[in-house]
Image: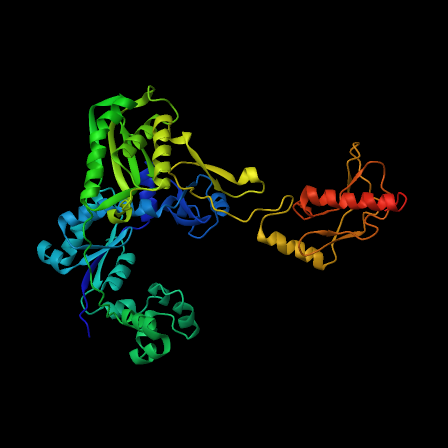
Amino acid sequence: MPAVTRAIVLWCPDWPVIAALQAGDLPQDTPLALLDRNLVFACSAAARAEGVTRGLRIREAQARCTQLQVLPYDPVLDARAFDPVLAAIEEITPGVQPIRPGTCVLRARGPARYYGGEEQAAAELLRCLEGLGIPDARIGIADGPFAAEQAARTTGAERIRVIPPGDSPAFLSPLPIAQLGQDELTPLFRRLGIHTLGHLAALGATDVRERFGERGAWCHTIASGLDSTAVVPRTPPKQLERAIEFEPPLDRVDQVTFAFRGTAEAFIGGLTKAGLVCTALRIEVTDESGRVSERSWLHPRLFSAADVVDRVRWQLQGSGSIESGLGSPIARVLVEPEAVDDIGHHEEGLWGGGADERIHHGLSRVQSILGHDAVLTATIGGGRGLAERQVLVPWGDRAVGVGARRPAVAGQPAGPGAVDRVRGAASRGGARCGRRAGRGDGTRRRHGADRPVLVDGHGTGCAPRRLLGGPVAGAGTLVGCCRLAHGAPLPGGRRGRERVAAGARGRRVAGGGAV
């Protein structure tokens, strides 16, 4: 049987909320909810006190808490905000392995021997996190990372829970089976009467493997308290970011960009020395009052030093010119890579660059002279008409949140449910319509309004001989369509109506004025 590693798990409750509050410089008692696909992904303690829970729709959450502040969930922000926490822990005890943003694990043997015991080591870790502004961290110590994490999540007011060696199976036994995190096997376990980890551990290991496979055997091992998962310390990332501080602060855009040029060259040189190129970076600007402005910039190929300087200038000046001053003097500028790639993937070909590279250099040159928003490229977005589907994006940026969707037919709803409603109307023999437009006096004729208009599965009108069952008055235009519950006309929008009207006029001439 493999050896079980004694582990320390450090858990920061509500870490996505903590990261968002720190990034937005918001008070700790702010009722905040983070959204993912229009559902509450995480919420603060103040929001939970008002009845907001994870999984609620945004409208229901706002109805329960009228002061609720809503922000989109950003996993990149979570990971970036947790890096300083990992660095601070590595300063007092090495060998940290991040599990997810807000949770990390390390071996218990080294810190326990250095600080004189497991509880003493845990207390030192809590003091370290309190210095970083995280006062509610929890620590669990047990046999194996899984049992240690469950101990951290079940701590009391002491915020430290130590499971003695060999007692992990008894500690895990009453926990629900859902704690394993196996969404596919959990419903099956429950149908078979296995509701706790102790129920699963009581079964034979061979029987579980034969019935549930390797994944089930792993669940049985974890439930039995025999977690032999090794703690693999992370390799500290290379310090690729660069920053420059101005003393005294500078209040002109050209002064800041000129002083930052050397930092940009050092930033690109550090990436080149590491064998990397930057395709996305984050620029953080701090003024003399402490306010921070940050933005992520993308590049279609890779950033050069001149490109980095251009992004700093664009972020500082916004829509103004380079001669314009700043609202507040700038005290610090930081540039950090967000996405890097191996430099070998971006080497020039044997015969130099092609036409695409020359086009890129030309457009980038024009953009550096005129501004970031001066060179735009068209992408396809959502909408009904062609003008609505055209989205202009600055050259070098990717269209965020814009996806090419199937164009909607003019005059018809765009959702997939609309097609089902149209087909349902066709199967029932059509919808009722008797509306006449174009008289100019605002009145409507109801003659023959109770007769059905047949609509086929494609939303095209199939008008019978007597479409509206009466004479067509004057120069009135026949509108041979039906409307759905939300008012979308059928079929075919304006062209469909013109086609039906043309057929009606032709039959009127041939039939002596009667349709």
